[in-house]
Image (cartoon, rainbow, N blue to C red; front, side, top):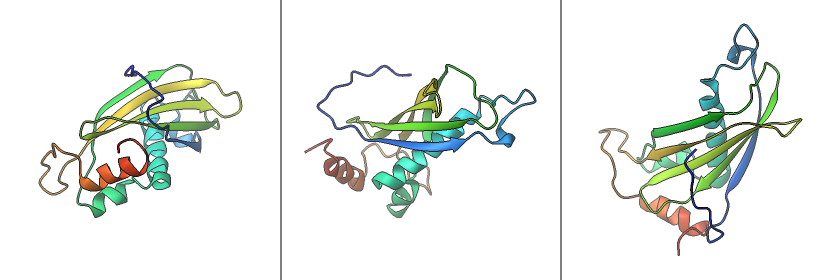
Length: 150
C-alpha cells in the first residue's frame, strides 16, 4: 500500500461493505483466488460511491469515466468459501486530478485483517479516451461539500 502522511486536517470518509465469499470465487482448496480481492475492492468502491454521491453513474452523467490506473494489494490471510468479510473503503484526498481510495478487508467474525490496498483512478472522456488533466467541476464541488477544500 502507498504510505501516505495521514493528517487530521482532512475529514475521514469511510464506508464498510459486507460480502460473503462465493463458491465461484474459490479454487479446489476452497481458498479465494487472489484476483477476486480486486473485485472485493470494486464492490467496496461501488458502495462507497453510492453512499457518498460519487459513484460511476454520477461520473457518467457528467461525461466522465474513471478508469483504475493503479491497483495495489497486500495479502495477509486467506479467505475461504463462505467467509463473511467486511470491505472498508476510505477516500484519500489528493490535490491532483485523480481519485485515490484505500481498502482494508477484514473477516467479519474475527476482525482479522486479511488484505489491504489502494486504487488510483483518473478522469477521461468516455468517448475519446482523452485524459483530463484537471478535475471536473462537479468533483471539485464534491470535495468542497465534504470538507476537503474550501
